[in-house]
Length: 200
Ligand code: SF4
Image (cartoon, rainbow, N blue to C red; front, top):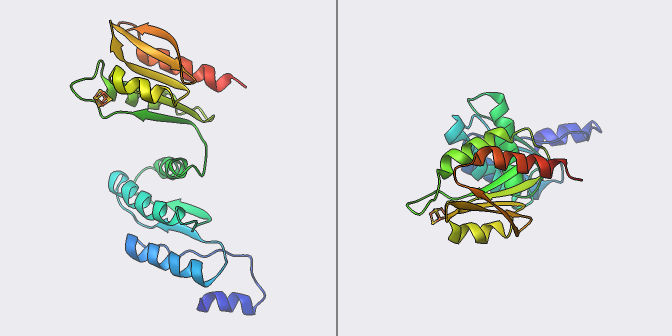
């Protein structure tokens, strides 16, 4: 606030404040104090957060905690990784909090003995092959029919585990068609996503 006063005394108000720290508790407490002390926009971040995995979690916890309280006007994710990953993580945090609608959002299960296909492989590939899609589209990919139907009812494209050797495919929450388990499921889902993306 001492530095803010220097700027104010010089009639300069076109600024935002950043007090990023690598310690999540220090950073979040500092931003909370600042948000109570002034109305200037805050640039928030957990700085030097670490590796792709650990830093993503630290950033999500710290930024998520602040953003959910309405604190933060611009954000920065700082990882020891390819800078492209920082942008992806930042978008993912904003998407999770529904502050941005962007790209494909996959709802998928961790898979278990009930899975009718290799969920992890399919989800990983579909995510990779749909990265170019900007339009917000929700896709559910669940390993079994039981839970697959429930999630499919709430997503634009829903794929369930197999029954009688076929996956149920839901579009906009309604049963649409079935796909044989021997067909290329990845290709089929990507095609459905692209069709949705091209619709007005
Ligand atoms: S959705 Fe079905 S396959 Fe996936 S983890 Fe749950 S029970 Fe297992």
